[in-house]
Each structure stands twice: as C-alpha cells, then as structure tokens.
Amino acid sequence: MTSPYKVVFSIALLLVVQRAGLAESKPLELKWNELAGMLGGQRLEVVLAGGKSVRGEGISVRQDSLLMDLTSPAEDYPKGNASIPRTSIELIKLHRARGTWGRGMGTTLGVITGLTVGGYVAGTHTNSAAAGIPLFLGIAGAITTGGYYAGKAMDTKVTLIRIVP
Image (cartoon, rainbow, N blue to C red; front, top):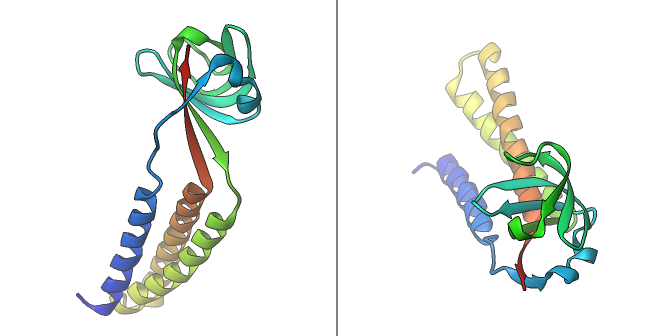
C-alpha cells in the first residue's frame, strides 16, 4: 500500500473506531414521575409500542402522557404538537449536546485531510486545471463536511430511558 493510501486508511480507521466507542449503553430505568425535569426542551426520540418511533422536542410530562413537538411524525402522530400516551412508550432516547470540542476538532481534521487528499488526487489524476480544481474542491469539501458530522456525533450524548412501574 502506498503512503497516501496508508494515510487515508488510517484516518478512516480512526473515525470508525471512535464511532464504535460511542455505542449505546444499558437504558436508565426511571419512574414516570422522575421524568418531568429531564425532558422539557430536550431533543427526544421516543420508541413506541410496535417498534415505530417519533422524534421531536419534549415539551412537558403530564400525569398520563408526554407532550412533544414532533419533527418526524409516525402513523398515528402527525407533525406538530402531539400527546403520546404513557402506556405506548417503550423507550426514550434523550439527545444532549456536550459542547463543541468534537465539532471543532472534526472540522479542523477534515479541512487538513481534505486539502491533503484533494490536492494529491487532483495533482496526480488530472492533466489540466479545468478537471483538477473541481475535483480538488469536491474532495476537500466532502472530507471537511464528513469531519464536521463525525465531530458532531462525538459531541452528542444519547441517554436511553426505560420507564419502570
């Protein structure tokens, strides 16, 4: 394997290993009355009975339901405000941002890697600037964007919550 391919392979392997380390953990088991302070104003994904899920922002926890502003609706719950009955909730995934360190680092590594790989590929695989410049910009932009989203995934903490009686 040549040196540039080793670098690309090493970076790809590093990103895969970091993503694998962010695997979901065992769900936190809470009673319904303990949820009120945790879910208001947070990004949620609620897994419903039957395996379907809805995503949106938690508004409040009521005695018998969870009030959400849905951004991705399900069959029985249209987009917008919805009241999800307590009995139909199997699992709640609480998404929280833990800062911006990962996004900054991912973007920086993406720019450096994108410039390096894009420059190498454009310089060695094209014969003219008319073909090399768009190729360079496409590769550099794609790798930078990938670095940003990899960093964003590192910044996001997902807490699984299972409701116990």
